[in-house]
Length: 81
Image 1 (cartoon, rainbow, N blue to C red):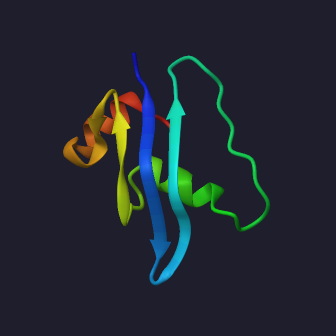
Image 2 (cartoon, rainbow, N blue to C red):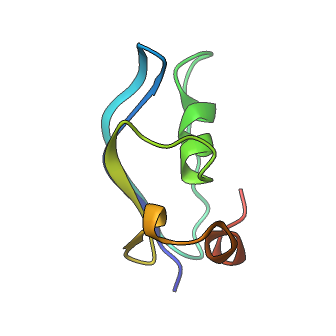
């Protein structure tokens, strides 16, 4: 069962904080969407979930284990964004 989640996630580009302290849970087998206006951080969230952007604060979990502790190959086997 693959579950993707984030706790207290904060993301920035330089000193510009884009996402501040969000929690997210995406269960296996469910269609999930991120909705928002232009420039609100939707793509930034997806980049962090795909390990293309590391969070300044918070943790992203895949199957209950921090993605920072998993190899890129291990994450790619379980997750497609």
